[in-house]
Length: 451
Image 1 (cartoon, rainbow, N blue to C red):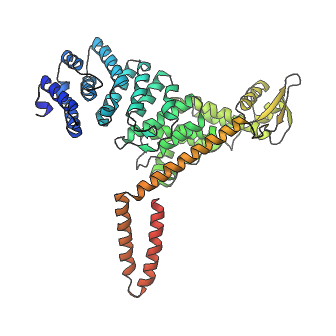
Image 2: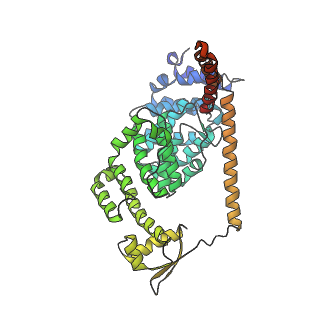
Image 3: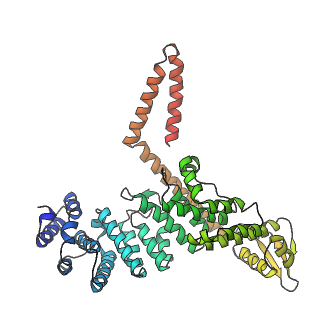
């Protein structure tokens, strides 16, 4: 029987049989789970709770997934039932069988998306952070794989203002995207990840995450990509001190570029003026567009950009002067006062962007050379860590290249291109020899471009 034609009791028996069979019929389990939603959403809540109690979460995770997902699909539930549902979902995410749930990525992603939406609406995101982190780590096949629920973990951490748990996932560079991850899940992961790194003031990582979001090849720019682009422009100024260079696809695709430029005019003006205008002129420009920046919730970032412009002036002064009074430093860097200049100077020293000492009695700053001799144990550890990262990247790229070379789709595409070139090269009569030679050269260029 199809699940829609079963009674709830028959469905329970059927799921038990499917999940305890040896070996498990994976196709039948997937079909049963995918077809169960209509049956279960039509059942009373009390009966669904009773059915849930008949299953063991470790042995029957697929069945528990079906029931909880169905409850999350029910539009209106009384408050006690919602409280029960939240606790049931938390317990499920904290203890499900990963081997079973990995076979059901789409319904599991749907459950997680709806659970996050429910927690956010209840202003109770914090209770879901731990279970969702465990869910991500359990369904991953390896730690560098992106799943459809990475974005859910990041959203919960952002909403709960509990950012550090997400770093366990974010700090691992993704090199494999599961085939069931859709564009929205992909974009939200990198957008939310960028915002988390911004909150922790890890600007370099935030810049890379946001750049991944705007690098998605598309003919139309989504609202997520647009918001990521605005933040990417501002973070780029903080990271590199000048207008950031857009990814290749973004800069060469005329339609995409025009959509970004047309919808980010206030940001483009600020970026273009960053290294051309004085800090006071830059501040006036920012104030003119303040309402736009506030509406986008980027005013805090814009203020950091204005501050970084003054810090950049201080950095330039270290290349010209050995000593300066704080009042002279403030005047030359366009800071509001010597006290403000001293504050920015201390921040730059703490960030190890400059090396200096301040004589408080004389109110004089002395700039010094970098004391690092690159011979310490810490520096050796840093070099070793960087070397391991490069070796890992090289290994992953090699695996990806091998995968491309053995791909049937790639082989078929190469064969089709070569056949087309041979036909075009041989059709030139007396000029066929020269045409054939040109075809060979074109084939080499084509293969190189595919890599």
